[in-house]
Amino acid sequence: MYFAVILYCTLITDSTTCDVMIRKNQLFETELECKKEIYSVAKGLISTGHYVKAKCFEFNHYGESA
Image (cartoon, rainbow, N blue to C red; front, side, top):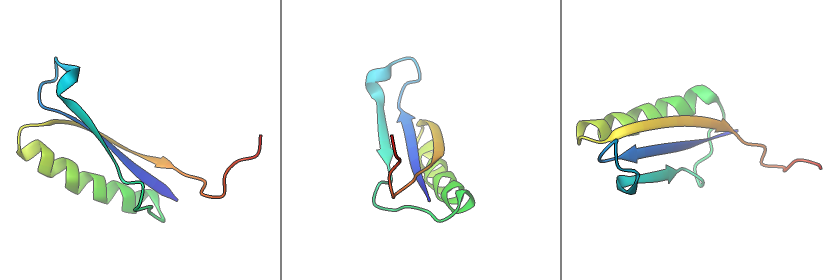
């Protein structure tokens, strides 16, 4: 399972203009599905003038042993 994280900023030189979007309620079965989703969302944000960094992270929904 994978989840998507998108960092987007209005001004690349001012971190106070940044926000993070995490798709925590929408897990993806494959990394490819996740990448397709973040590409679509990132493309929309870029078209509105935002600077975007997006990544998919593997998620073990059963937890990990210590």
